[in-house]
Length: 247
Image 1 (cartoon, rainbow, N blue to C red):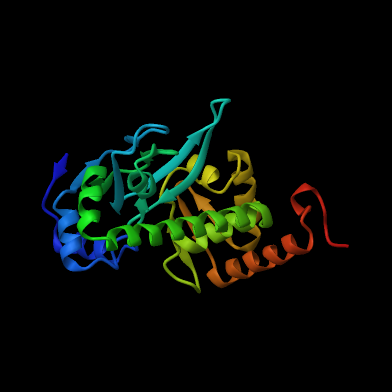
Image 2: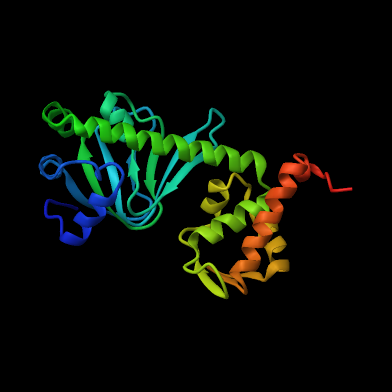
């Protein structure tokens, strides 16, 4: 389902996204005039790896994952994106192919910006190209942070940080609804499903329990303290995950 009308609530979200925040009103209006508001059901493929890039997307509601398929046929999750995140703008700017595949993991509302529209508007509004470069820089930083997390942090610590990022409060008790299925959470955190289960079991010692799709945390401060302690242990002992223990 495609729509042209963009309501003020969505327009505010678009304006605050890094991709669009620096654009003057006339440049934003020109770009939005060529864009579509799309409603996509869960598990809809938006684009596939190695296809020509025909549009990029801004997530307005829901969650979208980017993934690559290995030679062996395994799916590797590159990232999971939510409201305010831009997806696949770089290949649209360069006229290349999508380096990953994109799929909705929940029902989602998306702003789809066509490649031809970007090229046309950029000619008269160079600020759009600069905004896309700034957005690319943010994506690069996110990938660097993700690599650091995978290399330096233990599985339970990565899960703790993931839950902290979802929590509506920083202190006291909290209930967190998992935004998508545990299989995808495991992929996002660089774990096998069984490793995710073991990480949840490890967090029980600091007052975290899972009930179906909901996580109950007794004390967010205690969870944050655990995450910090785990981080220090990982730095001091890089082989922690393979059995190293402080002496």
